[in-house]
Image (cartoon, rainbow, N blue to C red; front, side, top):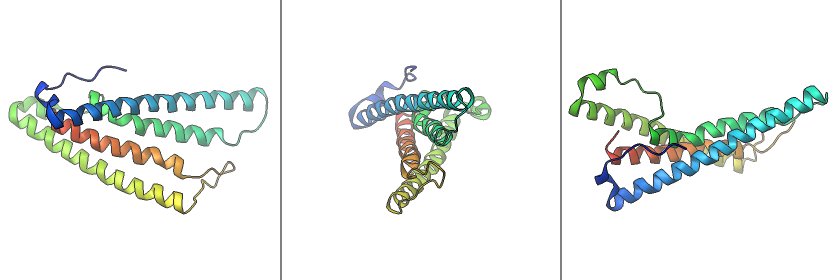
Length: 173
């Protein structure tokens, strides 16, 4: 994985610096988990192609597993993408204005992103607990419990919210 972008040395001290370091570490761990989930999805697709097209047998769980694992990889990898600045951003106006105006615009954008991700995290955790306590299943032929497939959405959006806070505290929002 690529190293994090260069960060303000002042933001690395004290409690705030500790929080930023913890979040950066959690984002990296989350990225490794995302990588493993993506690889698992790719391997299962290869297995499905082998079973279905070379052996002529039917498959029951591979498509659903791949959808869940690749979606989970995207959600779990998002905090790392935010930390490294790998997200898509249109910065024509802030870059043209520069200075304090650019800083304020980026802060406002980060606050909106944080608000959205926090709301998504809250709703996701409710959804996970409803699926867990209601014993929901996917309703497919495989029919696994639904909560493990929903958990990466809750964890990923929570970590993304916390990484937004770290980026705001870092002062490079």
